[in-house]
Image (tube, rainbow, N blue to C red; front, top):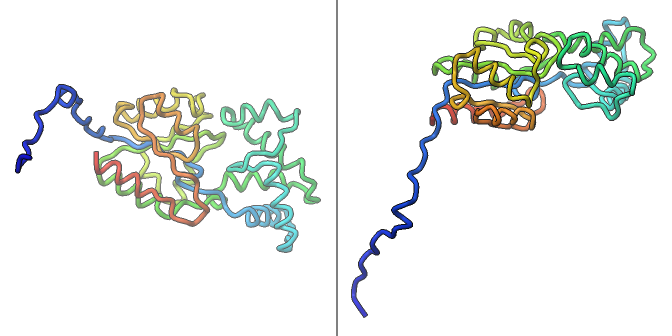
Length: 253
């Protein structure tokens, strides 16, 4: 038996192995809004605040029961309705393309719950339009700021039937976002590749050098536009969302 062994010569198979592909360089990050950068307020708080605006103070138990019923009916910002009444089917289908359809869909769903409070359905919807009805994730601002400092462009890409800019103005984050691409403004909604391509065009970047960050399969539709995609399941309001993973991907590029 030989007392030493020579390393084998490289085989033809080994020689033909492709070289590792370099990680793509990320020049821009597209962010979903709800469930990615911010979360809706607590459901009981949502109902109580809306009732207060209608001149009614709800006891805690009544607010909790009513919130549960309204969540089952369907709330803007989730969850999806248990059932969409036939009379609301058309506006529900168009809710992310037209502001009037968005309002009609969600006030209509809230109206299926007999709360005994005049004007509550509209008051609940107004909470969705207000920055007070949303809670930005605590790591959203720092992540956007770090990307801006690194020279990485950013956009908010959302399926939504109302303007999100007032939220970012109130949270003093507008200066950290280069552009907003909202479904009702561009006539496209995720997962249609067109909405992601529009965002890339507005930012002046190639899709292959763009990362889409979201929380649903619709956000993962960016893959069909050529973008890399990071899907982070939605976190509860007020909790860090793990957006540091975005910075890890960008800085390793």
